[in-house]
View 1 (tube, rainbow, N blue to C red):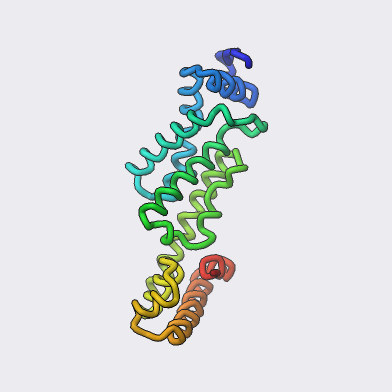
View 2 (cartoon, rainbow, N blue to C red):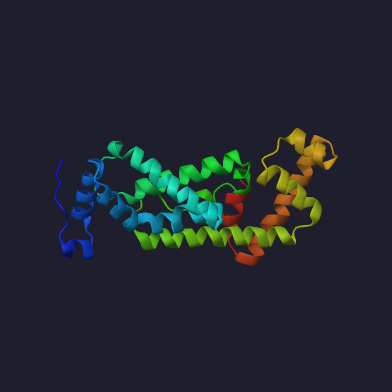
Length: 213
């Protein structure tokens, strides 16, 4: 394993070979290399993988620290594939966020399909990552805006079945209706939501990605 130190020119403008050298030094326990990798990638991981999922700066900062701790603990398992360390770090960050949201009972608040609009762990282009993170915020804002237009009874059944993922039996009990009536209400609520979404944004696929079971 090489212990070559990047030149000053390479440090100013990091390239693939330079990052690979940093990774190899970090895998050998070089603390300066670990710090350099943190400085290189922390901001992107924070903005693209963590903050869009938890939407709480203090929590996101804690999860960022946990992400790099997990990465350091498992750095010996990382194998260079030519794309750099960023996709691997993003995958760790997203997994830690999902674990936290599940434990906090908040994972249901993320509609099906929205998580897939977050940065792709195989994509190491920073501009593309930022663009996708911004897109996830747009989708979530659209869903909130459309939900505000749905009548309260439909809002409740969508909340119970689509967002909270409650069972039909539980949702029916919460609504005070039979399961058959619940199914009818959900069908009508989905139809209403879809109509509002398409009217506002002209994007039926966006509505379908959220309403799909």
